[in-house]
Image 1 (cartoon, helix red, strand yellow):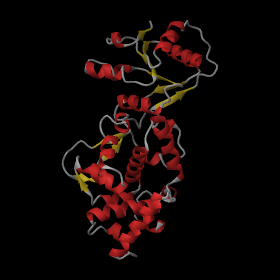
Image 2 (spheres, one colour):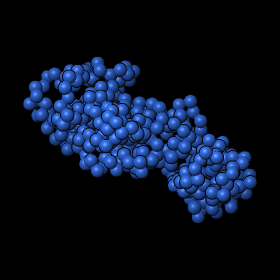
Image 3 (cartoon, one colour):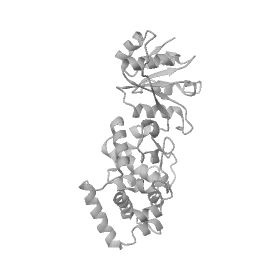
Image 4 (cartoon, helix red, strand yellow):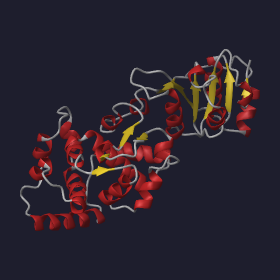
Length: 323
């Protein structure tokens, strides 16, 4: 079946690596969708299953369902490793992990994309369709893809907002470019986020400023938001805390906004061992930023955050201002 899948995959580079061990899973997803919607005149589906008569398709679906129940449906090893990493740092449950895997494959493997273009949904029915394909409860899918969920709130997944009919393959997007393809590579955090979140080397940094007051605040409030001007203080504090320092930077392949990147950073970084630094914050905090959003940004963060600015009119909202 790999040869047939490759024939209908537009992204030639690395295709075989992406499809490695995934042929059974792709077949299972496609057959479940067909069992409900009965694909008609879908050339890709017809070619993939031209060895099966109608009754045999049902038998094949039963076989694959049983294989999945027994843990015998494999996935791409690199994708699985990256999914386990995201599940660990984000606290995703099994259903959320399955949904993320499906959306990644749907976005990156064109044979799936081509098949599911025949599956028309709207903003409401898309949940039941995904539940059907993954054999999950509809309620579980709704919770996992709601606007308050970890996947959506982090900015990793972007739901399509239009309520009109559209293809399931177009129902969701990702918060930054090439995420679905990067997940098939041996990726660092910087790779996954297209270097919007970048680790800063603090090796050898010496404390030249009295940061005891800052450390005292952090001891009381580990997720504090501190406004200051000096980037070196951030490095010194991270070094004293023995934490990793990350910077939210601009990139050519960036999120829809740095605010999206900020929420993603709070989902992806280990809050116990990480410090986030955000420089030139005027694109986030300015006269157009609603006060409710400012309060949300500075109250819902999981990670200790240093905000760098020479002058900020919203200084009263921060836990500490360092001159």
